[in-house]
Length: 319
Image 1: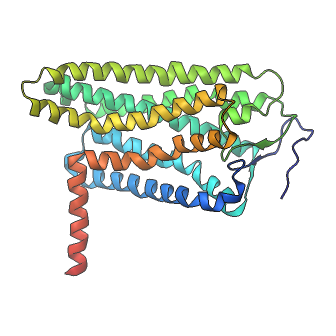
Image 2: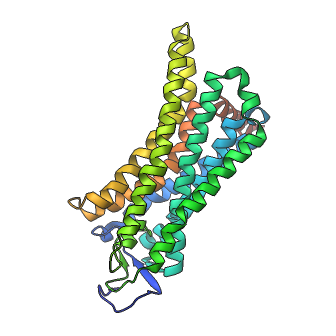
Image 3: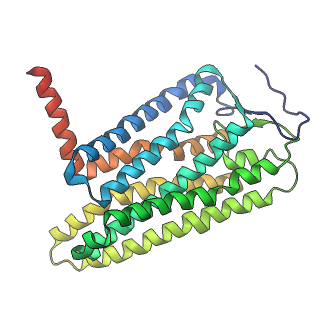
């Protein structure tokens, strides 16, 4: 199927997603790792939710935020991967203008929610390590609920200008998006006229929202490290640091690809287009797959509960 690169329209009824430009012949093969990633993300995050729900000892702030992270990851992958796989498998490239804006909104919204959850988890670790005797009185269930609500409301509000700005532009060049999903800058680049407002708002979100989140997390961990280094024994320091290890790994996996992908869209014109697209895909699909693995391996409580469930099922099978 061929698509025209030029058309006369102001508000297109549909966009055409190319998938991974330049690698169309290998879409079916590329779909294999993406399918595995999606399956692992679904299985891993549902496992986290099930374990925390069924184990009363895990009903505490850290694991409530972890459940919120799992739900966010499920929504994030489901908002992108099914359409991506439809392109790879069935060459189903069309997406309506409204659905494209909806996808764009949810991708940005859940990404900002995830950043906010990492801030909340950093706050939990800070209180647990720096003020352990007051942890249960500071982070009560109502406080955790308010923090979670604030994270969701903040994201919903600050991301709203993305689709509103995209909707007001005229699209007189083409309706072909050189991507496998409706990435913000990929859509904005199709518009005619001066679209610097959208680009500037994207940078504002990157540095003033995600950037401030990253700074808050860094400050929290600086305070945590000060307390850790004051502990009397090396064993105590190592054990305390391990409680933060999974969180640090998840933060690195989320923030570095996000920053790299966003800056590449604006300043990485020398990179091949398929590299842009692959990196954009990776920053959306890898964290939802890796987060359950990281927390499952690093968290002793989750690991023990998972092993107990596995051995219990095996016992029922052989009994």
